[in-house]
Image (cartoon, rainbow over all chains, first blue to last red; front, side, top):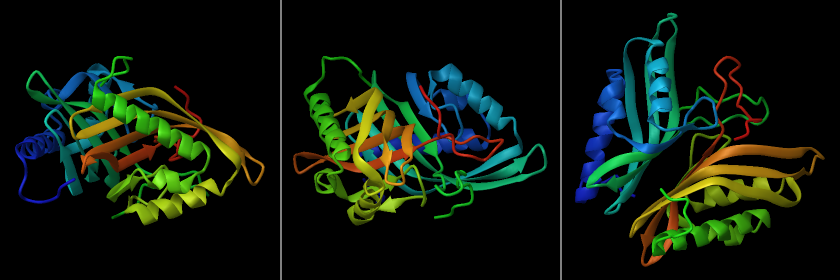
Length: 148
Length: 148
């Protein structure tokens, strides 16, 4: 895994997709975001259910999530690592999400994110994503206030 | 991602490692388990903290977790998918974990698991793992009783 500035071609390709995805989420651009997903995408999201299968389920979930924000979403990645081969790649790191919700509350939290890519017909596409927060064993609560 | 029986060489190699890892966890064999991890392993675990870096942190965590079980751990994978290239691969799926805790309680839960591999010096090694349960927005509780 690399966090260096000297990327291979594949690492540079993935890094460009990471940046495109960040912009799409910040601007709540669902259509742009969906462009990156494979038909067979399997998603493990921060909130339930256990899994989402297929782009339509993800699209509905993202539209619902985006609609809870007033204005753009703040999203920065920290400790991003990329492992990229010729036709399989993955990234992992921490996402810092912030913004004003339509109910007036402020969201400011970190979660872990892993994204898996495969090159299909010459194009990198996301076939798996996994976002989560850990939980606290004693309280059974999700740990929503952790920081790196 | 494939769930077929007709694996490429790399898929077969990863599938063998998946099975080795299952056996190591079931038998609570920490040393066997640690054999699969890269020096730069980054782990996002089901419980806090946000991340574990390096084999020593994972070893301590696994020893602690194993010690909470009376006897072996029940562990089965469901919906396993593997994407394997020449030198980067990942797997994702659901883990069903069960067993008797030393406090007498029974554990029986499902979580999501993603594991990333890189081939280094000719050997596949785990450079990233991400295990989690989602949480329920309304209660703020981790969802520990979900089933696929």
